Structures are given as structure tokens and as C-alpha cells.
Amino acid sequence: MVTKIDHIGIAVKNLEETLKFYEEVLGIKSVGTEVVEEQKVKVAFLPIGDTEVELLESTDEDGPIAKFIEKRGEGIQHIAYRVDNIEEAIERLKEKGIRLIDEKPRYGAGGAKIAFLHPKSTFGVLIELCERD
Ligand code: ZN
Image (tube, rainbow, N blue to C red; front, side, top):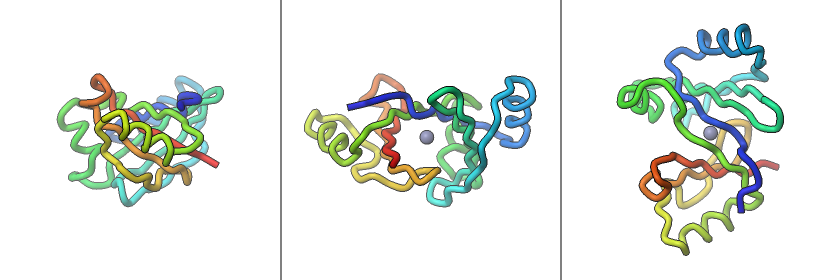
């Protein structure tokens, strides 16, 4: 069902400062930023090999990233697995009794179709499924 790690999502307080570290210290260049209103985040994408780091800064103090940082501090927030057909993947997970945050795919940064699985069903990791054209 899963074909690769699409990206690793990292929650940060300040996207500009974090980008300086990634670009100037690690030498990983951002290919752009996008605001995803629905998730109250500003996202930067940093491709590395055939995967990406996704840096996420909250645009709202009530957003999921702001809440994550409040509870757990900055750090890895989710891992996104690439799937070829997200609707099929969701159906399969439902049949297996896996708890989902999104029962239907929603819009993700970069035009992806995404859905989150509940960490209670995934041994503590927030998993995102991600389908791209
Ligand atoms: Zn993501």
C-alpha cells in the first residue's frame, strides 16, 4: 500500500529562522513556501534525495501545529507515507479497524491529497497518507 516516505513533517516556531539553519548549515534548499489555510500552517518544502522535509509554522495560536508545540515543543510532528490511491488506502484501513482522523482525503500542501491516521492506532506516530499526481 505504501510506496515510500513522502516527507517528514517538523513543527517549528519560526519558519524563517529554521530555514536559515536548514539552508545555511545543512545546505538543504527550500523550494518554496505555501500557506494552507485549512490547517492554519505556513509550510516550507526541502527536498532531500527522493523525499522531503516539510517545515510547519502555525499561522494561528489555535492551529494544530501551535497546539503540538505547546504540548511537546518543536520537533517531528508526523511522517507522511506515499500511496498510489488514497481512497483505496482509507477503505483498507477502515476495514482493518484503524482509527482515522480523516475519513476522506483533504487538500495538502503542494496539491497532494492527504489523510491522517490517529496516533492511538499507529503506536504513537501521527501518520499522514499522501497521494500525488
Ligand atoms: Zn505532511
